[in-house]
Image 1 (cartoon, protein in one colour):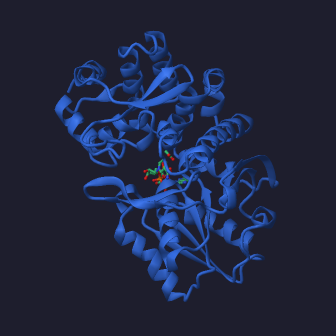
Image 2 (cartoon, helix red, strand yellow):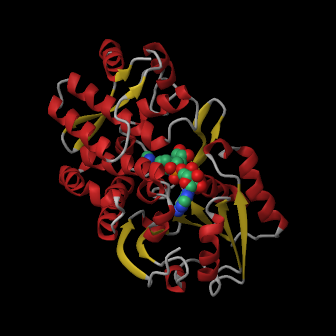
Length: 369
Ligand code: NAD
Ligand code: GLY
């Protein structure tokens, strides 16, 4: 990891009454003891990470935590979405119990969204709840999954179907960690960054169009702005609707189609962000067919996704298969599929759509087999 001088570039506060917390964005944050001041100073801590991230960043993090906790254990999970399940979750509990960790123990999720979601769920349930901190190391995790308290694991019959809302005490986005992220993973994270434009902030979308090459080159100031603005938008939505009674569902723009792509191809074939990118194009085309936006907006999104190194055309799974898979979506109610549509540029809404229109979107929008 580059030995950057520690510097905080940005802080976003997420306002949730007694569960409010800061999202800190900067450089060289992991090994800097100042980063962790304010986290409960429990005697024990456990860093949960995976086999890819541990050799890169567990050392600096443990070093940074040394003055705060008397002992810092590290548990290294297998890497991959296919391990986001009960068996892997149990490895965390095994380690906590083996080390006689008490109910003050602080868990640190060091890794991407898979590690973050699992560690959060472990923290929500170990001894009925222990504090945890998100230390996201993928772009996707820094701009989305580490913020807002959705935690959980997959079930063989559905993604993220078992879980809890449980907020971290702080989120620490060390931009230096993004230097080692494979390009495909970086692009997948950009899909979630791009998402915030159409749903909430057209100015941000225009900024992304003007700066996508700088982002692809991982330029510091561009990264800091993209991560900071994404976190601000997400924090604003979560503060208004923490448990997804309504508004928060707009953060799932592109995800109804996207989840169908992931499940239909088999998890791991396409990355989550890749599927969400194509899903956004389909959801925007649905919005166009419902008369909410024009075709130029759809084209604009397609161009930006392509410049971000993402596929913009969804794979063909067959219309009936898409519909079947989308009915398993958490937003579905009574068998009716709910879609996040763009009701005007920079604003999203959740609604159903006539099946004939949805069929047309899928038929026209997917690459023939
Ligand atoms: P991931 O956690 O699988 O990480 C992607 C890959 O990058 C992994 O192989 C990982 O080991 C590796 N990696 C992580 N950091 C690295 C680094 N700095 N350098 C090199 N390699 C690194 O995937 P992800 O895209 O971060 O997260 C996807 C998961 O997040 C999915 O399970 C999805 O369901 C979940 N998610 C949750 C939320 C939420 O609100 N909780 C939101 C979006 C997505
Ligand atoms: N990623 C969607 C949400 O956090 O609600």
